[in-house]
Length: 388
Ligand code: SF4
Image (cartoon, rainbow, N blue to C red; front, side, top):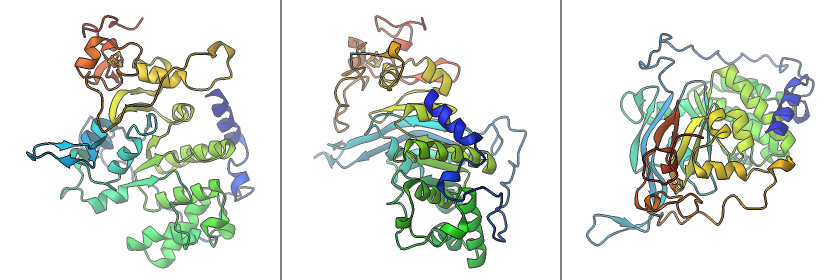
């Protein structure tokens, strides 16, 4: 993490962290007479206190979310067999102005969760509340919700239309949502500038004429074009070179404070998640296994899976050298997940109770929850107890 922090800091402390990627010296103006984007409207209910639309009201609340893919209905029609349990009873909140990091191995359900939040795919069960309003109801229909939530995907090339220029790409959504062509182009130029590209040089270019970092900046500009409040970043920097990754991370942090954004940041890189996130959610085989403040969870994890993920991180520190793999084998099939704790087939602390009973996501500290019998005194696990 230190290496990343230093890189990011170095990029931040340069005259412009974006110099290497496009607009050059950073004059402070894009050079074209474009109206700036309106400043985000302050929250109408500053007193907060948990009421709707107040600062203490979570921006996004997800409740008991379930998504299974495929499978066949049994002969009786009462159950479905052979379905992939991609997301199974996931609940969490994302506070306003914060970044929730989501980590886990490939196939744990992170990206499915992102697509469910975006409403790209329908959930089988569960509920979304956006700033206190239930999504998909009269109070907040899907069209209004999709203006508030935008997404940046991992594959910067596949997520751009190769036939549209940068300017057309960013101006497309505002045009569809009723902005005049002139105003949409002006907004596009402003955003292209704000993500660190010179509109004079880049507005007329096509995706194949850009580098990976430049394409991801265009994707970020496009995501901001409708002035969303929540941005989902699904492995948005994973495909970038490390130096470009640090620049884009700094850009995301700057844009977050400039536009008052809230992020859901999905990544398999714990260093990046630690750098970006206020809170971290760890997923395993479609379930949340640990959730808590970033420094607490990554500093003193309580779930053996989180411990294994942290132990798997490469380190230059010779004291952290290990000859034993922290985690063996692949995750079990999500078509037929193990009984009880889904991690028990790979957990070195597994006890009989772990295979027999499923642990709930229980409070184990201030705003810190884990689904592990080890962390719950009196759970029946022989090693269960308070933190050493
Ligand atoms: Fe390991 Fe048991 Fe905790 Fe699951 S509940 S993580 S198997 S100790």
